[in-house]
Length: 175
Image (cartoon, rainbow, N blue to C red; front, side, top):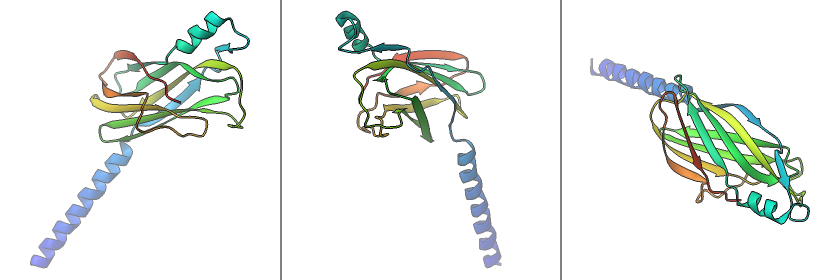
């Protein structure tokens, strides 16, 4: 009798464990609808007016997040600075419990190819499967090789995703 009881207990625990891990997989935060503007403003130390070049170099990226009533957050990242040979901007997300990590990286076919000019780019994407809750969010800007300093996120803080809200903030720029 004890063996059957322990057998049922073990079977029940196995079922509960498999359901909770399946739930974690189903509820992970997803990134979609990635888009970017391409080069919207270009400038160089050699060819731009000095005051325009200085003004552009002082700009810092800004992030605007709009949350709808279905748990989807739309991100707009503006004024990213990369060289003029950048083909596109990539983004990826990972999440665990109440932590979200976003990595934004430039891409070009040949990352060793250097340019003497810079461009401003905007990127947008959506995160879905969010619960209306607070998250600890880290945002990193990677280089052309996908490398970034985990000790220096461009943004690290607590964000509250609640329905029909919009918030924005400046981020530091490490490359």
